[in-house]
Image (cartoon, rainbow, N blue to C red; front, side, top):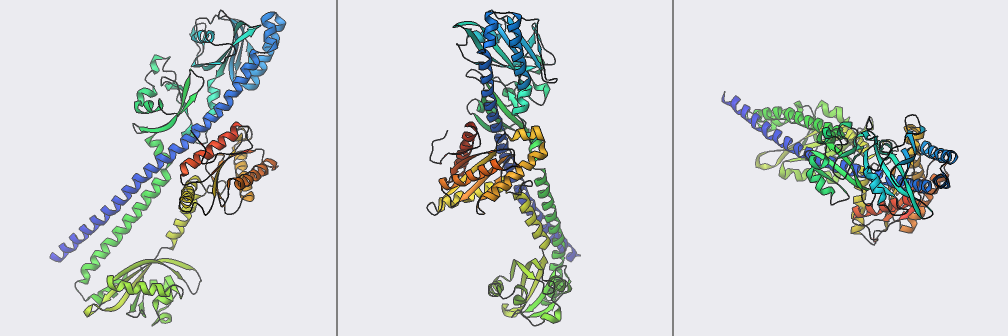
Length: 628
């Protein structure tokens, strides 16, 4: 009875200790995974907001060009000077053409100096049709008209987003609009104002495109109220009392305070990750692009990683429990008999492959699992050196030294690769050596166990490849790129004079048009083809990764800025002349230093410069250049 109690307590204590260690380890892994998920998601969200901002800057220049063109058009001047039906019809035809082709504007109006509408055109996106409004209204009481009167000659102003009103009543369903306003002058005399109402819904759908539904930005006004969101119930809290509780400044005060001092960034508040970017629509008006992700949404983004972690922890716990019970029982059982006979008996009756060798490592006995694992029969290797037989001549000396070292500690364990002499296949196994000592603490013989981990090693390798490769292009993914960037930066820091390394960011120009006009299948084909062209054009030693939707990153070792620029121009030209690729690419280039974060920013600035200067070009921003 007493012996049974000892076995029970031995088993309980061992199990509790091992399970506690395993749980503590995986709890720490879980926290690390959570932190990595937040940081990676925040970076991806900030890239999305930067993309939306770049798109807005491009659209903004288009708006400015249109309103300048319309406000200085000869046809409008003719109507103002001679307001007859013929001149009116010419203006209306021009406005209709602009509205139908541009699709940005819900209204185009001309107001006289008193605030009364003289010309007005309405545009409906759903039917792609423009209509002339005959029932004109007095808008002198509206805030945007008073703002228009303050504008200087030829100045273009923007009135923040609010709801459209007709005859003093809100239009329902609610229709938000962003108004562009400019004075109209004839012969140095102000005769009125041209006002363009921009369709906010359509604008947001174009700017906020994202292949990831989690990264669809919301638009927030200067006072924290939502102007654009996928959730209609949150909108226009500044105008509708029933929705006033939906205010970013109230929901996330810490985040809102940060937004007042920084142009972009992210804050974790109330179990939400809030990523923001300032959008300056005019000197007097600003908006914020915001991505708000809850804890559940963050967890969903890494659900697969969490599942793998839980699965791994479960397997380890089961293995620990599976080995704890028999190991404890064997330990107590050994106490009843001599150490030598019990060790040999337990080893040969276990589940793993076991070989018993003498003090000179010559084989004495093997079990069936050993024959099955290695392909060696008992009679084939009896009295042969087990180390030389299993690991071969190349690693024989080093393995022999380790075996001899195990004599002092009595145990040794490591991973070995064994080749089956019959099939030629290689097996990866965990080899554990136990020294059995005779009197005088001299080695009597060794008990060596082998556990086949080939499937696990193969799975680990497959998982490693899947975690580092982009499925569409088979290039390296963003995670692998960040690892390689840090490694290259460290090499540059350690050996600054040995090699020059350059970093480039490459972006497909107007890629969104391909998706919108030809579908996502064609978009995927274009991305894959561009990746193939980059591989064909650059060197095998260059590290190429796809880090975003249509964005690629290239690390070019042993390359100066001039050499890298020439190589990247070859890539740019190759894409441009490729008959099966209807796009061009823009490239930002910088030299790599020890500060990888700054270098990435320099490359991004250079890429933005290429976009700004008309795309289809390579721009350089050196690490030594001054950046904001």
